[in-house]
Structure formats: C-alpha cells, structure tokens
Length: 152
Image (cartoon, rainbow, N blue to C red; front, top):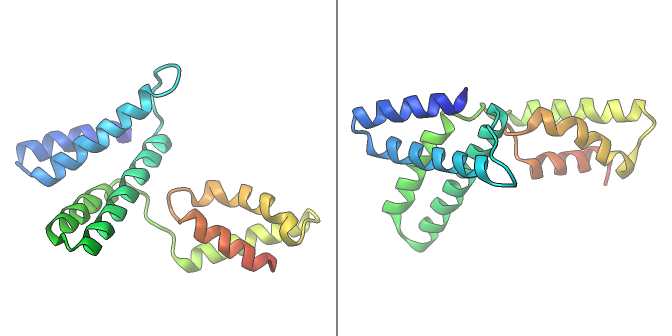
C-alpha cells in the first residue's frame, strides 16, 4: 500500500538525515491520517484515496511556491518546490496534452453513439473521463477541452 511505502520511505529519510524529505513525508502522512479520521468514523484509506490526499498536498505546495515568489521570498519558494518534488514521486505520472485530447475525443464519440450531442453530452463525457484522468490531469483543463470538443 502507498501509505506503507510513505512510512518506510520516511524511516529511510530520517536515517539518511534528509530533512526536506523527512519533513515532507511527515506532513503527507499527517494529512493521510487526518483524512482517515475525518467524518463520522475512522476508516482505512485506499491507495486512490491516499493519492487524492497527496494531490491536494502537492497543489498546496505549488500554490505556496507561487505566493512566495510573488512576495519575493525566494528561499521559502525553493523549499516549497523541493517538498513538491518529494510528493511528486508518489503521484501517478501526468497525462500529456495529446493523451488527454485522445481521451476527450473518444469520450465525445462514445456520447455521440448514445445520441448525446452538444452541451447535453457534457455530463456523460465527464463521467467517462473523470476516473481515467483523476490525479493525472487537471480537471479544469479536461472540462475546457470537453467544452471545446462539444462546440460550446
């Protein structure tokens, strides 16, 4: 499981005295634990759930780095980028623009076979695309490509 991998990598980072990796993995594991205990009852997260948590953490690091850059805090921005690099090791490799375009084209064609056209097909197309692109492509970009393909 991914959570077990994070914990074992944390142990390795601590022994190697890699402060950035150790700190990042501690924060990631804390976020995973918080997600496990949130809600009405505690539950064990699946690997997909852990990836979703890590995606959120990576997004926070990316946004923080941009904020620090705009504020002129270069050292803090570099630290956030280093933490982002650690998190990206555990995320699925992102889809290329071309791969996303092929998925969109196929999903639109599939909706067309069901008799759905124009913006009425948006929901059906996104229903097909979301599981295929989750964690691998930005949902906003995918939605925009779908709108363009549907002629909206």
